[in-house]
Image (cartoon, rainbow, N blue to C red; front, side, top):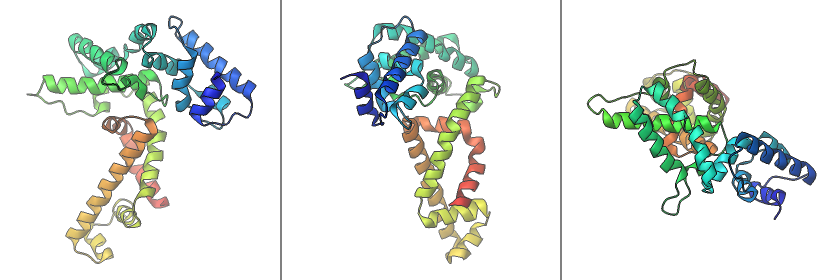
Length: 287
């Protein structure tokens, strides 16, 4: 099977022009080799990894928009290519940046690097390595930095239980001027907004009304109870249910959009939480 056929099959994207798709694929391979000249690339394995992660109006356009270098090293790491594992050490330098921001010691940084090498590069119990979770939705380095920061915070909490570290991801990173943090916020904000909008749409009409009355109209529990003709305790219980449903739906939809485990999604939400209230008001008004 030639690469275009394989990519079309796995991506489910249209191929209006095979020459254009071939040219786009050639550009992806060339870009991967420029970015990682020391990696031995297998085009079949590269296509098998990249295909399911492509998004766009057609195959050529999706390939042109794909982050070739990031997807390429991830593909070959998943394929257990030794040269890719060696090159991945450069990406793991993001652990140093995360460690500096969280004020971790050198030993703690080195330990987390080793943990991530195992988590991301080693296949265990018949399951693919963690790097398979990278979908190309943002920079690979940013994805690794979020993972490293979360692991460092967990590690620091474990090491310092007498003084628990209760920090959000953004608190831990500490510097609003960090260009990587700003980039991550921009990239994930649109995904979060879409997930929030979809989550609100998926709620029952009653739950949307409850949230609209509470958040947009800022009615008290007593007023909400009166509007529904129920006791304030019942209204409070219903509102709590609606909020929980919205949180659950948003987390699930964002996890699906970013192809990340749900337990990592709270870190992404904390990155964009400053826009949460404004977005929720707008979408509730529209719903």
